[in-house]
Length: 278
Length: 250
Image (cartoon, rainbow over the protein chains, first blue to last red):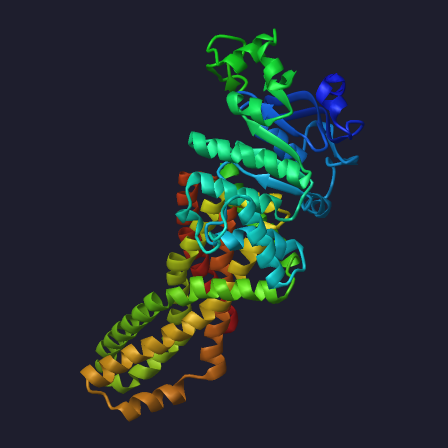
């Protein structure tokens, strides 16, 4: 159902490769203990697009990324990437699949015992047989793309939050993957750093022909960045479309989230029985 | 009650599976060698000072106690024999392993726990890098390599401490000291039994440290618990295995 909505969307029709979504999520259900975090979620992520997964904290946005990456196994439903099912892959197959994915985690997750250069070079050293000179060229190229040329010798603790996120972005795309997933890339950054990261995500996506998924709850920034957006509430897709369209949605949960209202169907108090806010 | 009794057994089982997973993925090569050497420097070489200082004073106090006891039987010239045998067979490997657990074991557990808390382990998994092979294995092998070498340093400094006290302070004859040591301490029985023990202890401490680091909760309190558990569990295991190994070796 959700997927057919996306197929009808002008963005999909305008996209050359819209006939086939790169990532398809069907009937995804995931429980944590007694609590059903995701309940039959359907999504299509078109090739070459930047798609946002939005929703209040703790709603399962990061869980969706982990399910797409095969880091978690769903209780029901499936994820397919480029026609290949992710669910049920063994560890070796998952690792092979992840070589074509880049990730930017919430705090950047740079390796604190390695320099900036070594952080960016790590995926190359592990997965590519490249000479030192070639590694140096590739790392410098990626650092230059995120505006951090010459920072290779710095340790992560010498970087600001925004710089660390940019290094993490360089590391995420150093293998030239086809998919990059961003988990709260703007969290805790100042407005200038937020705009910089936003611009870099868009630019990197378009320049390298990537497909990007951005998990966030920053409504303002998403309007400028993404092509399509899914809003998750109560384990389901509450709304989908371009953020500007979603502002006009009649769905009470979407309306509450987009306008930041306290009152509405998205709960505030913790519900002991379900383990979720209620 | 049943759960409390089964819990350590379950934990030991999980830890054993973790060890198997670590060893099953062992791929010798330049990358692993580089990581092992780097870790040997970080956890082994940086433990040298504490090991040497402690070794020296253990040797001194051992000589002091031995001379006091042996003097009652007019056998104070046997001090080097007593110090040598107790050091090579027992005190050297055991005390080095306990010091290593406190100095390096805690740092390994805390470092891995912190990597987990700051999503670095997650990031590694998502980059298709096995964190057990990349993080745990080099530290385990470095511990295995470091403890015998540190034990050798501990023993050497302890003998030096005994020399300083026995010959320098108590005025024992240097020739008698060294000849008793040379003739009474045997390579296979005394020296090698200590080497085997230190290898086992190195394996125990580093395995416990990487296991608690990896199984820690990704929070500040989780890292603290992992660190404490590493010292407590590895110290107890070292003493238990010391008795088991000694029983088989004598």
